[in-house]
View 1 (spheres, rainbow, N blue to C red):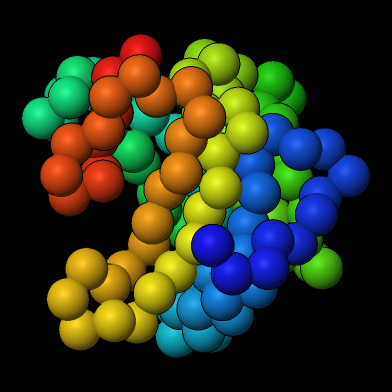
View 2 (cartoon, rainbow, N blue to C red):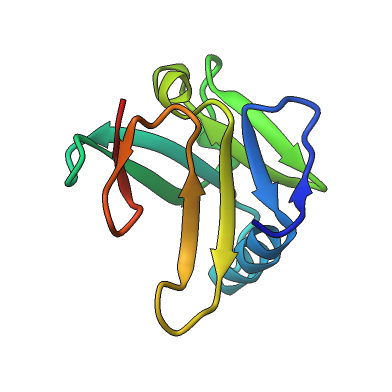
Length: 118
């Protein structure tokens, strides 16, 4: 993983490379958005990761908010139980590129790295 940016809270760690790419994607949206990260049932290994931009007005009172130099990542408390300590990185490699999740809570991970089991 490239150098991680440390948040005051360690629930989700974000690499410099991932932050750069997320800021680029957010600029393309033309709005000041935050990133919601979570999990849902499904995928090869039982649970899959969710990531999507969201308007800051949709942040719920019980959401955890992680701030990385002004870029905010939000996560609901139920999802955070499964991904606490997650490291989010980004690679622009032609094969295997994209966002990469390293989840210390996963007991198994599928080959594509987009789903996991606990």
